[in-house]
Image (cartoon, rainbow, N blue to C red):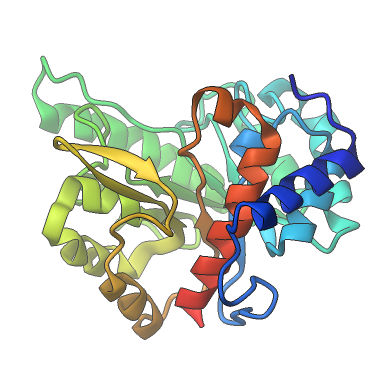
Amino acid sequence: MFALNRRQMLQTSLGTAAAMGLGSTLSAEEAKPSRWKVITFTKFLQPLSYDQMADAIAEIGFDGIEAPIRRRGHIEPEQVADELPKFVEALKKRDLTIDVMTSSINSVDSPNAEETLKVAKELGIPSYRMDYYRYDLKKPILPQLREAGAKLKDLAAMNEEIGIQAVYQNHSGANFMGAPIWDMMQLVRQYDPKYVAMAFDIGHARCEGNMAWPIQWNLVQSHLGSVYIKDFKGNNGRPEWCSVTEGEMPKQFFQLLKESNYQGPISLHVEYLHGDEGAEVSNHLAAMKRDLAWLKEQLT
C-alpha cells in the first residue's frame, strides 16, 4: 500500500499539494519565524524509511520532528539502542532534529524507560512526551490523582538524574488525566520545568475548555515545555478534527502566544485524514505542507 520510492513519494506528495491548490499566499519557506522551532508529529509517516522521512520533512520546510518512539511507533522501546542513533543520523544529514520523543513512558517501571531516556539524552533529544494517566470513573478521582503523583515523583527524579525533560500533553476525553489541565498541572507544578512540564495542546484545550481555554493557557505558563497545534470543527458536541486552514482556531491564541515568553518547539499535528485518504502517505505530506504554510503566517 505504501510502496513508494523516495523520488516518487516527494513528487507525488508535493505535487499533489500544488495541484489541489493547497498552497498558502505565503510559502512556508518565505514565512519563517525565528523565535520558535516549528516541528511536526510524524505518526503517519511511519511506513517511510528514516532517509525518506528526513527528505520529505526537509523538503516541506519543518525545523525538526516529534517522533513516536513507542509501542507501534517508528521504533519499539526494546530497539531504541540500535535504531534511534540511525534515525537521528538520517535527520542530521538534512539539518533536522528530534525535538520531542513521543514515548510509552509514564513511570520508572515503564518498559525500557531508563535505557530509552539515556539513549535519547546521549543523542541530544531534549524532551519526551509522556504516556497518559487514565482515570477509572467508577472510583474516586482524588486517590487516583495521588497515585499518579507518586509515579510522577519518581519519574521526575530519574529525569533530573539523566538530564531530560518530560512533557505531559492535555488530551480530550472523559478518562484522560489532564483533560481539564487543572488536575495534571497540580502535579507538574511541583517540579522544575527543566524536568517535568506541560505540552499545551490548543485543540484539545478548546475541545474540553470551550471558551475557558485562555485560563488554561495562563495556568501552564510557568511549566510550558511544548505547544501543539491542531484544530477541529463542531460535530454535535464532539470534535471533528480538520486542517488548521478550515477549523475554528481563535486568532486570540496566536496573539497570546506571541505575547508570552515561550520559546520552545511548536509541533503541528496533522491527524485528520482517515479511510482511503489517510492510507496514502503522500496525502499526509501534502496536508503538512499546506498546514505549515498557514501556521507560519500566523507566527510571523
